[in-house]
Image 1 (tube, rainbow, N blue to C red):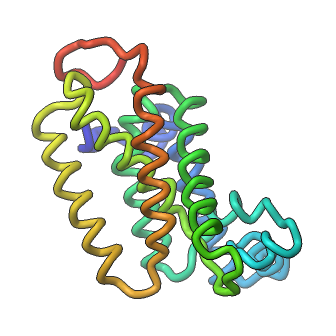
Image 2: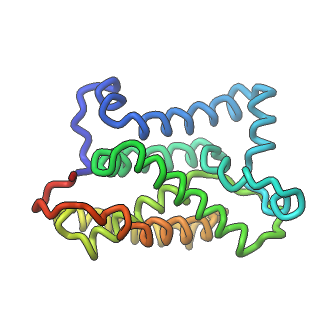
Amino acid sequence: MFIRTERSVSDFIKLYPVVAFLALVNLGLWFIINILKLPFGLKLYDLGVGHNLSIFLLDEYWRLVTPIFLHADFSHVIFNTFALILFGPALEKMLGSIKFSFIYLFTGIIGNLGTFIINMQSYIPHLGASGAIYGLFGIYIFMVFFRKDLIGKADSQIIKTIFVLGVVMSILMPNINISAHLFGFLGGFLIGPLIFKKAKNISSRTYY
């Protein structure tokens, strides 16, 4: 389920167009902003980074969405993009590109909304796709406990192990937006019953 068997990048793009597009956006924006430092890229960063006080005082509600596509340092963008490429394809294949796109954006927004609700007058900026990534984890955890017919035992163990590691990292590592992780996860977990409502019980296969 999580082992990539595509023979080329073009195969990956054809099979998982949304995951490929999101990965390209993550890396492309980071490169434009942090390496090339192009003026329009820096302006995009200033307008797009999460800033709760700007939402609270200036009604800049787009900042609940745009931080999903922006990242800080190289390790930040690589970690989130790698997680997307590892865990996104199976869900895009199961759910289809449109539904997967909705879930990714929905859980990312929920993560940013949770961050805003908890500390709406904060002046500290935040950014990253972690809320959406943890949203995917939330969906997988729902499958592990409530739709075992859609995920194999080995894949379930992988998900549980990586999720526990992710929780530990969220707590121990500095400068982590725990609110985005928590609310993104809850968004994915709670939407699980809805998106898998029509899923068929077809043993260990992972698409319907």
